[in-house]
Structures are given as C-alpha cells and as structure tokens.
Image (cartoon, rainbow over the protein chains, first blue to last red):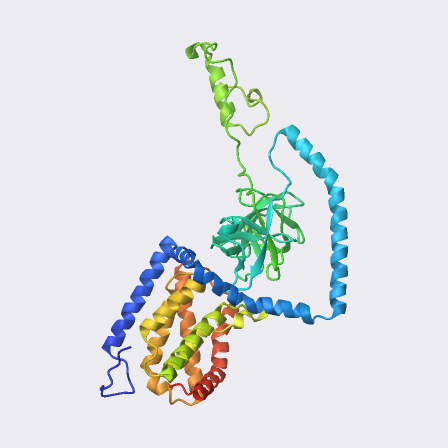
Length: 333
Length: 161
C-alpha cells in the first residue's frame, strides 16, 4: 500500500488512496465471486492449474499419511495380531455368506435372463484412497487419489464396505472430490427395506446424519429400519445400504413424519473407498415397442382399419410398462 | 544482499506454510478448532513490517488460497483484503498494544472475517453452519500470542528486518 509518510497524523495511516484501493479490490472480488458462482470457473482454473494444485494436495495429505503409518509402526504387536485375527474372521464369514449367495445369484441371473431384464448383480468397481485434505466447505467432502486420467467421471457413486458414501462432484486429472450423502445439499432416493416404502434422504446441517423429512403419517416406519438405495433417478444402483433410522417424530407442519438416520458407511473414518463404474440404468419406461403387424406392403390401407384398433395400438405404445397386453387395459369407446 | 534475499524467502516461506496448514486436516473431533492460518500469518507480517504487505498482495494470496481450497473464487481474496485493510489502518496503534489487548483485537478481526465468510456463503445459497463453526476464531486468538512470540523470536534469530 502506498503510504504517505509525510502525513500529519502517523497514528492514522490510512488515506483516501487506501480506501479507494480497498473498494477496488473488494469490487473485483465480488465480481469474481458472482462470475464464478454463475459459470463455475474455479474448477476449470483448478483443472488448468492441476500441475501445481495436485502436488500441493498430496503434500498437504502427507501428515495424515504419516500419522497413519506411525500408528501402524508403533502399534504394539498384540493389537495388530488381534486386528489380523478379527479381519480373518470377518473374511471367513463374508466368504461363507458369499458361497451361500453364489447359488442364489446364479439362479437370479438365470431367472432375469428368462424375464429379459438387463439389471446385473455384477459390480464393476475401482479402488481409491482418501487423501487427507481440508477442502474448506464445512466438512461434507472428501478428496480421492484418482481422477480423470483413471476414468473417473462426475456423478459416479462412491461406496465403502458398509454402504453408500456419496458421489463424485468434481474431477481433476489425478484427484477428485466426493460429495458425501450427509451434505445438506445432497439427496438420495431410498427405500425402507422392511416395508418397501420409497422416500428421499437428504443430508442434515449437523453433517453426520441423514434426514427424511417427508414420510407419510400412515407409513410403516420404525426406529432401526434399514434404508437401501431405491435406484430411482438412475444415479445410484438399487440395493446398497444407506443408513438406519435412528429417530422418528412428527414434522413441524404435522403433515408428515420426519426421521433421522445414521449413515451406514464410515463417513469420517474410511481410508479406502470403492468407485462404482457402470452407472445404474436410468429407471423408467423402456423404449417404445413398435407395434407388430404384417409388412407394410401387405398391410391394408390405413383408412380401412377400424378406428378402435388404432386407438388401442396407441394406448399400448404409450403404456409400455404394463406387462399385460393392451386388450386388458380397458375397452376403447 | 543475501540478507535481503533470505528475508524475502522467509516471508514467502511463512505464507506457503500458512497455505499448507490451511489444507492439512485435523482429526475429526478437532476439526472445528482449526484456525484460519493465512489470516494469522498475514496479520503478523502486517503488524511487524512496514511495507511488506499490501492490499494487492493480500488479494493475490487470497486468490491462491481460493484456488487451493475455496468454494467460490474470490471469497478468501475478499476476506483477506478486508482484514489487511483494517490492520494497516490501525497498525501504528496495534503495535504498541499490550499482548492481551492485541489478542482481543485479533479475536475481533477473526470474528469479523467469519461473519464476512458467512455472508458470502449464505448469499451463494449454502446452509447455515453448525454452532461449532464459531470456535475457530477463538482458537486463532488464543494461539496468537504464541505465534507472535515464536515468529518474532525466529525473525530476531535470523536477523531479518
């Protein structure tokens, strides 16, 4: 700041030039903020500057890695042995469960083939490590060590061993940022495992719980119910654990019940996560089926066709999700 | 000559250190206690040396900080500019405050900074932060005397102006 040394009162060093300069910089900052808010420049600049930015992230993540390494190095042998034993037992249990499920999965696959659906139980995943970097926005985000060069795209679901963690929000060449399901701006379509009720779980401002603000009053929900992803919306594949209902109360408007749920995933403690690669097929009506009929040259002229038949065909095309043929869906006038 | 260069590198080094400490996460429970390091270090240099910190420099540092961990580009640039302006304005008085008064002044500055941040976040559509978000300025102010003495001592040892 250009300070006038010869000013009469040195105790109040600020002068008009300083204030003008402040106004200039504040205005510049505000213009930048507005433009960035509209256009999302920050991530584009970050992407361009990734050669500088990413090494800084790795550097800032080093203390966390160091602490982790040190805790392993200085952990006493007994604790490590015990942990090893526990992991072995978990693995054994998981393998036993898998073996039992294997037969069921094969049967399921065959039945689905018979029904001609494409949903598959196979998982196409990619392992990623969490980098310990504080990205400013309260704490609803984590940073991963994989990025665009590893084929990561925004929107991919992120899970850990226990459940859904969130989805990829922004991607740099070799790092990416995950928006956690506990972010107040995040919503995930869920279904209650016991009753099959579908609803939406939002993040909560406290940052470590999920809130389900609009459950119908008559709906059957209890504390302890498991929440699974419902697959609606097509972002998250169906059937992954999301959380457990921990409390239930009438909402402030009295029109709904509001529930709070604890996330199933270890949101704060996970070090390794899995990225799901094939995104869920968007749910909804399948592509319209072209009505079957005789080849065009053999078909009778259109005007010769009776009117009810055409309207029936139209109804069939418009309601393709109904498995039954159109003749059961009501008689045309 | 080399003394001058050393002093410049020392200045840049502390700023880089501040940016890195801003990025380093604390373990879960301590997370809300993390002070805003760039502001603290910039405050020290504002108070200690005459012409080193200018508004433009604060703005640039803020932009770099935004690039590294910001939510909106220009947010920290604005906060640091406002902070540096106030400190430069009252610098001659702040220097001769006793330590406890200086600490109180730092607390007021950091609280002001948080309020600015809150205004920006709310205007950009984020939700209100949890209550423990307000702890950070107090931690920053509590650390201030130690940080000040440490940096002063190091500066005296390195004989930097």
